[in-house]
Image 1 (cartoon, helix red, strand yellow):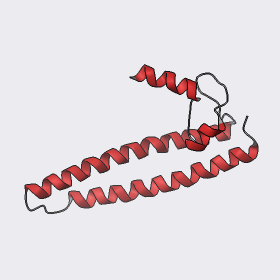
Image 2 (cartoon, one colour):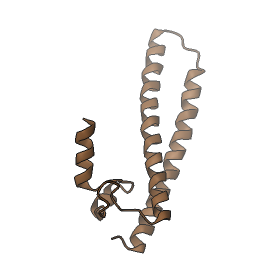
Image 3 (cartoon, one colour):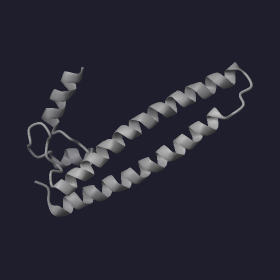
Image 4 (cartoon, one colour):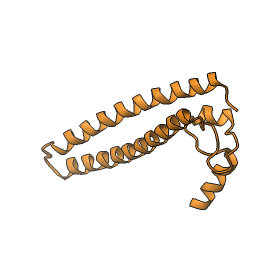
Length: 118
């Protein structure tokens, strides 16, 4: 099990990442809106903006998913269930949490869920 200090450290990391993502999301949304209002002169301009918009949209979607995972992890900290695998209910290894502090599954269960989705 994680110590209170370790949980507090993960909570700080999660909150810091949450702020960063929220800044990214609002900045990217403003950029996308600005790009949509540009007066484009030719097909090359349209293609360039279209490709950039598609990439930015994909990044936004990925960041929204990560934000939802972070919010879920922060809720688990409040509930006292942070660091527990959602599938087997065993502790998630601290090394895994260091890499992905919003992990919902231990390594073994994550591999099982990935195989099911492929």
